[in-house]
Amino acid sequence: MALLIGGLWLLRQPGGNRTKALLMIIAAFVVAFNAFIAAFPPPQLPG
Image (cartoon, rainbow, N blue to C red; front, side, top):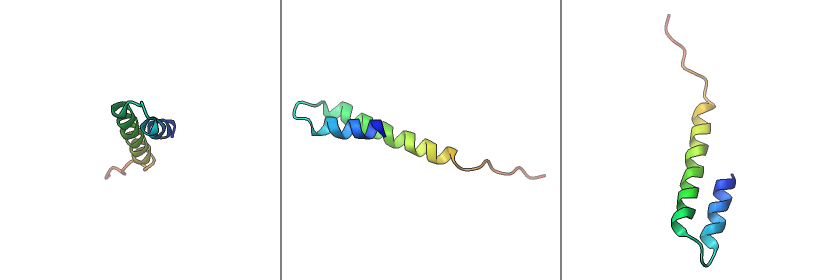
C-alpha cells in the first residue's frame, strides 16, 4: 500500500522522478499479485 501511495504521490510532484514513481507503482502491483497467489491453498496431490 505504501508503494502505491508513494508512487502516486511522486508522480504528482512537479519535480518528481516519473521513472521511480512508475517503478514503485509496478512493484506495488507485483507485491499485491504475489499476496493474492499465496492466499490460495496448495493443490491436493493425487493418491
